[in-house]
Each structure stands twice: as structure tokens, then as C-alpha cells.
Length: 277
Ligand SMILES: [Zn+2]
Ligand SMILES: [Zn+2]
Image (cartoon, rainbow, N blue to C red; front, top):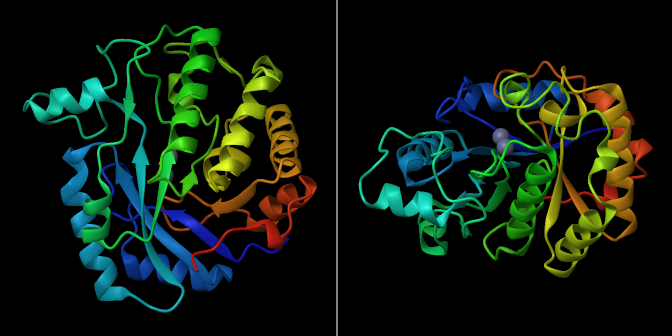
């Protein structure tokens, strides 16, 4: 499959290590034959609002046909939003990742009105870190599944980002290498995949096929990637639609051809892919 869309790209306005200016994004897409694409900078909590305002401004100055404006929100907790609302943790640009109550109420920290004011055309929602549960495989699986389900059921989310992505920086620090599910993806009960696919289809959500952070992740084991392709094939068999997202933070250095072949292996075709109308 030839990849011609990319709905997950970060600009230098993003709170993390992203470096591209909007004209660089446009140029990178043109070079790689990406004809429809969108910028989606991180919004973990309201602390990141100035980043998104800057991103929107720069987008409007560089807007061309086929280039769209989105946002990547994190699943966070009500507790976290309350803490930030009280004026605590004002330097938590990456969210408050520790100290809250496990299994607490989940949330995203943006409203429909704010999205409209910002001109956001679509919202990617991602599970980015565990919410205060034990760093044990079973608890992490339950927590990530709970977050993915929350996003699949949330009215403001368009695309569920990178299901089961897990930051490799946690390996060796909080969990063993290839834990919690990279040694064998089957450690996740298939009933969870069923439940997720049902919610996605019922709520008309889109599932992201993430290139840099999953399919082409340099540290993820090949076996995991093969199993992930089977997982995508399973989601497709349930009627899921997908969006391609490179998750690029730097100018493209991705093997789009290889990614296209992997997506084909999952039986996913152009007509299964989502695009901004
Ligand atoms: Zn993400
Ligand atoms: Zn991202």
C-alpha cells in the first residue's frame, strides 16, 4: 500500500522534543508523496494551551490544500485536572504522572467549545502513561485498557492513538525489558480487544496505525510487531476504520514503503483508511 496520508505530526510548538516548523512539515510531506496530512501537537492538560495557540497561529500562516489542524490529547485523571485547577503542579507540561489515586476517574482537559475556538478539525486521543497503578503487568494491562476504552467512548475523540504503545523509556526503570506486553502480546486477554473493537465501531471512532511509535519503532521486538499486525487484522475483521499517523517529531526519516507492506499484511486497504472530509 502506498501511504499518502499522515494524521499525526508534531510541530516545534509541541511540549516535547518535536522540532519541525510548519513549512518543514509541508515540505517533508510533499517529498514523501503525502497528499493529506495534519499537525497534532500535544495537549496533556491546560498547561499546554499556549503551545496549541502557537501551533494554530503558525498553521494559519502556512495553510495549504490538504493540510489540516488537529490536536493530540492525553487521557489524564480528574484528580490531575483538579490539582492543576488549584494552581498546583504548574510546571507539569507532561502531566502529573505520579501521586494520584489508582483507578480514579478518567478525563481529558479540553472542552468542545475550546476545540471549536481553536479551529481543531479532529482530535487524536492517546494513552500515554499509567495512572498511578502498580508497575506490574496485570495492573498495567487493566489500566491501559481502561484508558483506551475511555477514549473510544469519549464524544470529543475522533481517533484513538496508538493502542498499546508503551514508552520504552520505562523499560529497565520501572519494568523489565519487553514488559509489560512486548515479550508476548498475547498476555493481553482477547476479550479486551473484543470490547475495544466493539466500542470503536459502535461509536464510529477511528483507530490509529502508528508508524514511528509502533510499526517502525526501533526498540520494539519483531515478534511484537508481527503480533500487532495480527491485532490490526482482528480490528479490521470487526469493522474498524483506521488512520495512518507517522507520529513524527523530527523531519521524516521513516521507511514508508516498509510500513505500507506491514499494513497490507494486516489486510488493510485504502478504503479502510480515514481522511478529513
Ligand atoms: Zn501519543
Ligand atoms: Zn504524538
